[in-house]
Image 1 (tube, rainbow, N blue to C red):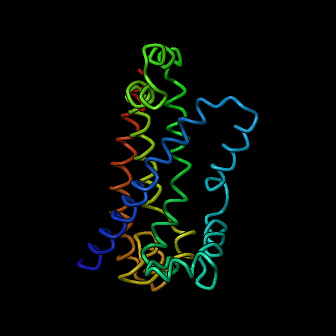
Image 2: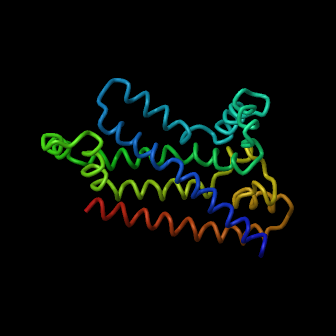
Length: 220
């Protein structure tokens, strides 16, 4: 059970770290997409949504190429003592990329429901664009944003394909719940795998349930 507790704690920490990393850029991207009406909006939105439709292993392979140890970025990170490949950082990077589109889409939808005339009124009263965003748009869209953060966190809990390519499946170092379930199944330890399945089902259920509650309140 000590090993199980460590795996659960690492998975929760990785998903939480990834969610925190995408919070500001995800909300900003959602707001810009909601307010942008140019021809490039469709292309930008499609690009940001690619991790949702691409096979996770394809995303993982792309990340592996970007952060490979013999590449420019990989060498630069290694030089400052922060390598990504086959480290816990790789887990966070993979989780961040896979969860980011969920937050962007949820935030964009929430900001689209904010009446733009309210922002215009704030501007006429002397508020700057950022002040109008912070004092008007952000509070009105907060439920949708929190729901997006919870969805991103839930996605991070179950990330597998991209993670195993970028971070590997190293027990005690990069092994998350989904990787541990796969590993134990391969070893024939079905009871141990099922124990972890039950844990992740409970955590995911709570997160998704909270998201549904927020979404319903927002719809009202």
